Each structure stands twice: as structure tokens, then as C-alpha cells.
Length: 347
Image (tube, rainbow, N blue to C red; front, side):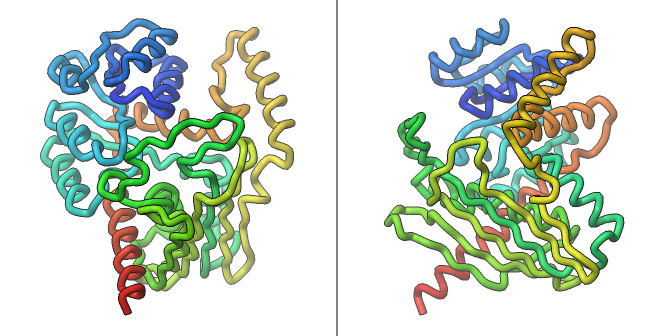
């Protein structure tokens, strides 16, 4: 049984907590968050040691195997590094950290500590993405030439159905690391590297500041792989009102023999999919079989799958499929994109 602590009980931390309850090999024994309200809300799921300061959790980490970290971007570096130094394996939300220097420091800490670290690049675990990667690897579209990867959403601006204030760190580049490119472009860049299996360089970068925010609300970045010169077009934005399950996300892979698109793999009707999966889980429950948490949401199931993969790596001494180096590579490309765009503005 893996004993786990959770640091940060916001939306993502709470989801990770709930997902852990569906894993037979995992027991959450401690949680930490400075919000008394968040700590109280977590007790709905069970009983744990509760800490208002995550450092107190780490000071009492002798009975923990791992921590799940879900805190604001600017806190990632400190929390991840101290967790590794406490001898714990780490699952952390993206980004690994907010700049290259911090990421390089964490990569070294992982190596020195001998612990395992995995980053929550959840889009790799979406069913459609997994199927596309398998099809690409089997050569179904020949040699990959171009990948178009895009996501346009609300960003930190909630839709009118459930308005909430935007946390101040979101719009502070010193704390967030950037805007839409750092937030969702990070995932798109990682998917490009995931599909190509290569490092990439930035060919073109254009950032949008139409909202006059301190951070960009949109970005278009063109990438090229270092060896095979596969091109990638990254298009991201925070400027579109959307209400789940509407999700403006897609990947199109063009090869010299054909193409693949997420549109071919996504459920045709997300509502019908939810009903079918809900019924399947009901039948699994009454027959004593294992449930598939969040399968009815389709996209959110990836959060369960990535966490399960992390724990499987701990149990079987495997290297996590998303490493600290993957996080570093994504941040390097983002920083390169910011530099290129800023250089154009100053010309």
C-alpha cells in the first residue's frame, strides 16, 4: 500500500484526492493547504492528517511514499525541491517550474535524490491521443510531416454559469510564468514532442495582448524538430467562452500517406457517451467489478489514468513516462517563444 500526501487542495488537488480513493494500492494519509475551507472540504472524502503549512507535512513525511503537488505555478519549484529533499517521490501538476533555471535545478534534484518524479501532462492520457500515437507508431500515415495542435478556452476567466474571481497570481508573469502559452501552450508543445519523439526549436512566435493584460491571452507558435524537420503549428487562446463538455481542442497529424485527427477518435456525442459510461459504471458496481472513475466525462478520465500510471511506476520501479526533463524541454521552448516574440516587437 502506497502512502500518499497531497499538497494543495484546489480544483486539481481535490480531483487527485478523489481519484486516489478509487485506487486499491493507494492510501492518502495527509493533506496540506493554507485554506481552512479547503481542508474542511477535504474531510468529505475521508480522514487524514491535516496541515495548514505543507512544510509541516514534509517534516512528518517518514511514513509517506509520495506526494501529489497542486499549487500555484510560482510555488512549484520550492515545493517540488523540498519534497525530493525529504526523500519523497513526486507527482506534480504542470508546469514543472516557471523558468528554465528552476527546471534544470529540479532535474538535478531528481537525479541526486534517486526519487521518481512525474509531471501531470494529462493530455497524453486522453483516449483519442493514445490511439493517435499508436496509429502513428504503426505507420498508418507514413512519415509525419506536420502537426497542428490547438486549444482555445476560457483560461482563468470562468464562464457566466459559475463566475469566480481570478486569482491574482494568474495575471502576474512573475508568478505564473506567462499567459495562455504557459498555461495551455505548454500542453500543446508537449504533445508535439510526444508525437514526434524529438526535441524542437521555435521557427515563429506571435503573442496576442488584445485584452491589455500583463500576460498574453493568445499565441501562435511554429515549431520544427531538430532532426527530421517535422513542423508543428501551436494555436492557443484564453479568449473564447466555452462551457464543458464543449471543448475546443484538436490535433491533426499530416503524414506522406494520410492523416489522423482527434475528431475521428472523440465520441460523436459527448452526452450520449456520458450516459453509456455512467450505465457501464453502474453495472460494474452492482456486479462487484472495478469502476472507471471519470470515464463519463471522457476528457477528465486522463487525470485518473496519469495518476494510476505514476503509482504503477512506484510499485514496479519503472521510470515515469513524463519526466522532469520533459518539463524542462517544454519550458525551454516557451521561453524561446517569448524571446522571439519580444524581439519582433522591439524591431
